[in-house]
Amino acid sequence: MREWLANQAAAGYLTYDPQTRRFTLPAEHVPFFADDNSEVNMCGMFGMGQPLFADEPKITEAFKTGKGIGWEEHDPRLYGLTDRIFRNGYAAHLVQDWIPALEGAEAKLRTGASVADVGCGHGSSTIQMAKAYPMSRFVGYDYHLPSIEAAREAAAKAGLADRVRFEVAAANALPEKNFDLICCFDCVHDMGDPVGVLAHIRSRLKPNGTFMMVEPYAGDTLESNITPVGRVFYGASTMLCTPASLAQEVGLALGAQAGEARLREVAQQAGFSQFRRATETPFNLIYEARP
Amino acid sequence: MTTTAAPFDQAKFEAALHRLLNDVGSVITAASVITGDSSDSTKPSRVRGL
Image 1 (cartoon, each protein chain N blue to C red):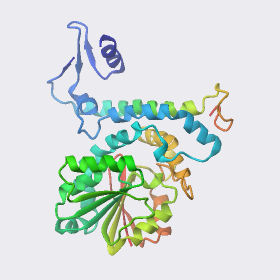
Image 2 (image 1 turned 180 degrees about the vertical axis):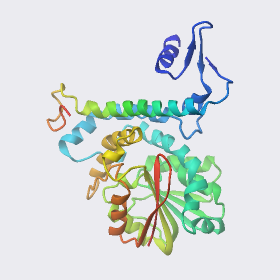
Image 3 (image 1 turned 90 degrees about the horizontal axis):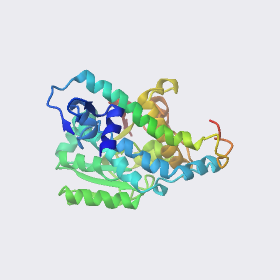
Image 4 (image 1 turned 120 degrees about the vertical axis):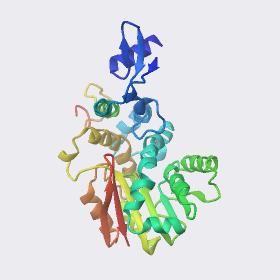
């Protein structure tokens, strides 16, 4: 324990008082290390090193073959960590800022809408929306069965199993249609065929429905993404997102820093008639597209 | 170890946030750097010595 504390103090995460020989977690550092609900909790990000280092041989091999690595092929710690990294940001913004920024979507959700969350992972985004809009029905889709099982368990734990369903389905093969709102959270850039998926999503919306696409914050040029946040996203994109896309059909490999101009192009190629940046945070861009 | 009851200092919080983003960026980038380790002859030539 002494060595652990000394390590954290030397890193600047704890302070050390040589007079009292006491270590202290400063109040300003509590949100990063000791608040599991904090939007800026960093433990999940640090933890991401575990699956990335464990999967390094696979990733190196993928550089050699160019075949990519499916999302389902990674160290199993990846999936819970991914949920942990994103869920607090969604809890801070999804219902409060992002849905209200979409034209007319919030009113539909309050009175009763049909919503799909495509690429839902462990279902945190789906469950947060279901809690906020009790008159609406929600279904989360993901092709990764262990993630769907985790999402079902989370919905049951939240007492929402009667209003939220989670189903195994690929993003380009949704088994239902006529949705008022379809969402994709931080996953479109991981897909092999984003144009095909968005075209399919468009076909699954009502004529006046809304597609909300949440993607990592990014500028349109590499040089505009050479920032601390861009460094994190490019790292994850190199090791996870781009290999995931390359492992699927088409293998477009958008990368996690695609930027608005490129994503607008994808949406337009998919047939969406309207596309705009609805809002943003320091970590995400939120786009609205209409059929 | 204790936590402080001192008033929350926003400037300290923002400085720590910047620092931590760099730290987690280092962790993730380290994994990426290893794929291009120039001293490891088992690496494919296309990524060696990035």
